[in-house]
Figure 1: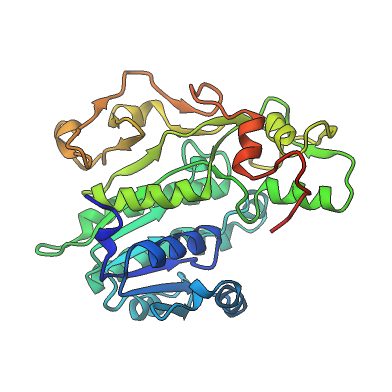
Figure 2: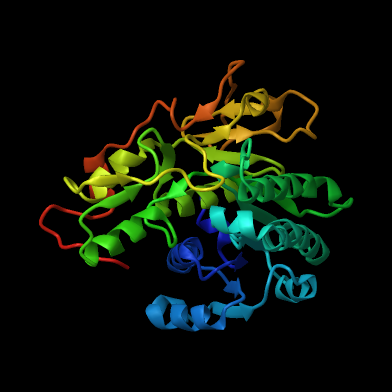
Length: 347
């Protein structure tokens, strides 16, 4: 199925729509998908105003801005009226902040997820995709634990759908997004712009999964096309050592090891050994089939080309340090448009 035609004439709502992903997704949908409406749902009126002013596409006749918080179920019920597709991108995300403000993270990331599921079912939304994170797998920090709980709620949301209802829920799980707001790369670029002579690096052994913002948007669109309900979609993306990431951003600039922050892992995991028993391997991504599906996992899923994939081998894990794909510093600079003769710019 053409993932752009799927949204033609439909109303699409993005929670956390003023964030990096929300803006990129809204732009792609408005430019390529001919939607009836695109609704930006977020709680900050200043960010909505700034988004509208930042680019003419965000003042498109089909775009709407809706103030609200995912903690408020009544507001979600109102916002979801006549909505066909929902992308749930709203979350509290900063790992150290979660350790010191656990209740706030639970209210947004867990209670908010429950509210999304309930409001979507009550309004007959066709399809819902929630954005997850590699930190939700075998979590060691509170942020990851709240996202794991969120993932479980969205997968189980398919069980809550009544007879005759068509609402479907799935999850997209990926790694760190290159250059997204609040990530390490914009921080480093700001430091360089202000004249820093060295860059802070947590641990020279650390590895992370990396994906571009454009790739996340395309992957979510593809997932809408193939979702049956309950799947967790995981793209095959490269890993990179944190020291190589710093070298790619600022070749030759000294690095200062500052130690791992509260709640951080050395390496990230996107598919655990236990998940692998229910995971299908397809050319460009993995599909974790829901536990509620009791039959053969291969019979649950078919991609756009009719492929059902193959089950992963026993003992498989998808880890950032044992990944078979790696991103080198030069390729990173190309992805970030950091050519040798180009001055450092910070968006």
